[in-house]
Image 1 (spheres, rainbow, N blue to C red):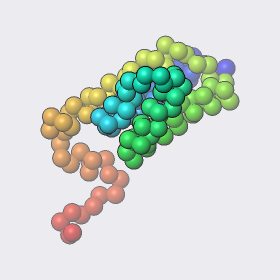
Image 2 (cartoon, rainbow, N blue to C red; image 1 turned 90 degrees about the vertical axis):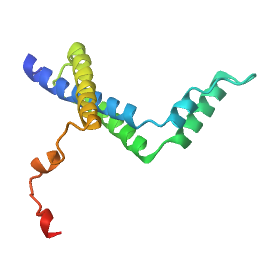
Image 3 (cartoon, rainbow, N blue to C red; image 1 turned 30 degrees about the horizontal axis):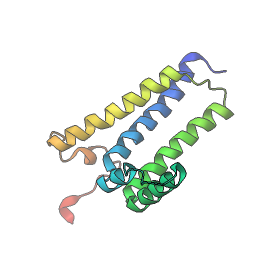
Length: 137
């Protein structure tokens, strides 16, 4: 078993990643995909047939961005399961839940800043490890 702070760091990092991916997934969802998920059950349709039809309709409405976000989310959950199962990390549920919320809030804050135009245009260039000479292009 790791020390308490090491458990919190590992679970916190995974929780932030999962929270961020959840928020990214909610941002890239299309109205068509949501409508397919909310389609009502038809008369005489069994529960399993209804679920199958909804799943098929949602798969058809998925965009490449949605597929990538869903794969990223599944990868983060798989990493969490493997880390908890294969390593001496103990799963701290409260740490995980709080950091999932913090990750979602972080992405929401960045998204709102970007939508409002308050992020500087050269923000990404500041963090670029290889500066590019834009005037030569």
